[in-house]
Image 1 (cartoon, one colour):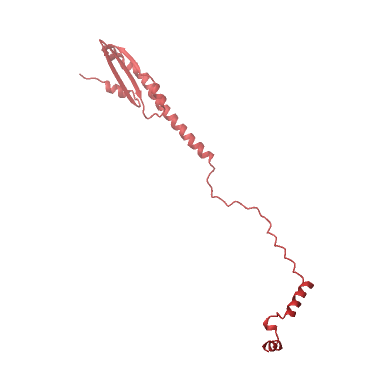
Image 2 (cartoon, helix red, strand yellow):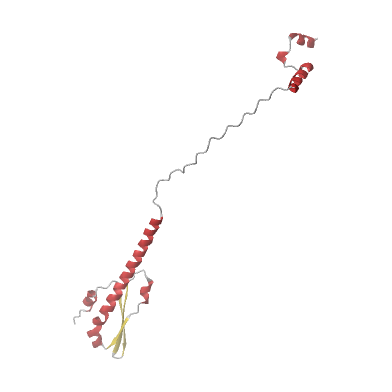
Length: 161
């Protein structure tokens, strides 16, 4: 017995995993066919219902590929497009983030505002000698508290006696 079932599956050109579930009930069979492309990151792909075929073996042999070709190719195309769409959205986000960032340039030192040079502190006026200062000096002389080098020899002779 020779069949071309797998050749016909390959000829569909589907992207993803083709799943078949066959249930027999008396002389009738129920075949559920679904396609899942795990490469598609959109979880909406999981909401696509499988194609349900019910018939005898003879009916299914004759009409199986005629019934599943268009729906499975549509699902395959949709899932591929969904993935391309998601990738393009991610690329757009990255491009947008790059556009928002200013191009990195070497940072220049911020220019400081030219402030005038600080003013020199005003010189304190020299204290002019007052008469009171002179009086203090005179009182030192009267007390004999001159520095040693200013004392005369005669004064030192007096202190020795």
